[in-house]
Image 1 (tube, rainbow, N blue to C red):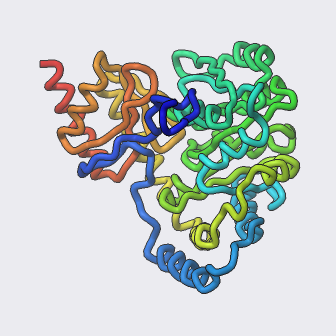
Image 2 (image 1 turned 90 degrees about the vertical axis):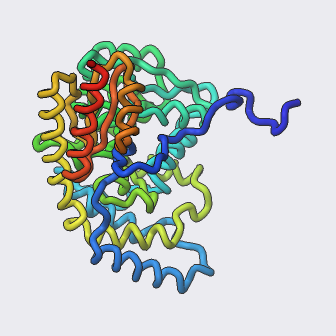
Length: 364
């Protein structure tokens, strides 16, 4: 027997992870380029210091105060109030997704999405011993609703995973598509992953508005992106209280540390200041889209803090050329496409200058 006795389906698989390279301009993992304000950082430090005085005790396993604060925040972004009983949180939206699959999927069931989609989804399914089923989007990365309904009805997935805005394309899912998926799924769970929801363009609604209409709908968010807290690892969801209750069965004991809870609560106290940068990033994104189009490139419509662009006969050569010039972006999405995170104006200027240089070099 080969040692260690790893599950057979895991043998030979490389761990997930974007390249981590020491270059001046890092625009590859959709981080917020603006750190928390000094005032927010000081509040977090004070809150953690206070939590440290009782670290000999386990944290509130129901994270009651945090659920109340998250519910209040979500209620400000929807026409329908969200209650604390509808909120669940975990260590990043990755753990939220895995808990959903552990609770509602498993052996003998399948999880479903439509490609291109977030590359971690099939790994969540694999880790939960759930079959992975993938449909496909149209050339403009929209969803053919008739085809989507037919696939869901055919496969009867236990969980449907849909990022909106979609990663890696940045496209948002319209409310009618959410309704179609929820109705076709029956008692299956439909997860709208709004990790980039705060970056959506004016007039694009959140799926939070649809929660009262669909008991099987789950809307997930994260504090890693708009809140500039990628290092804190806090993801959360809003759903029917019955769904949150079910997740409690699979959560590990005291899964949210006292330090994590204190950090998230402090950040939420500074939400207006932290989210003030979102408008700047939206404007920079839209300017980047227009600039890329002016270069004759194809660009996906984006409601996120990143832009998918192409197409290149050899995208890896373009990616390598940018790295050589000190700019790291992501080689992901359909063949021929690349994804750039939106950074500061100076970072985006460096990206544009490098890309122009690379394209000229490769055209020569």
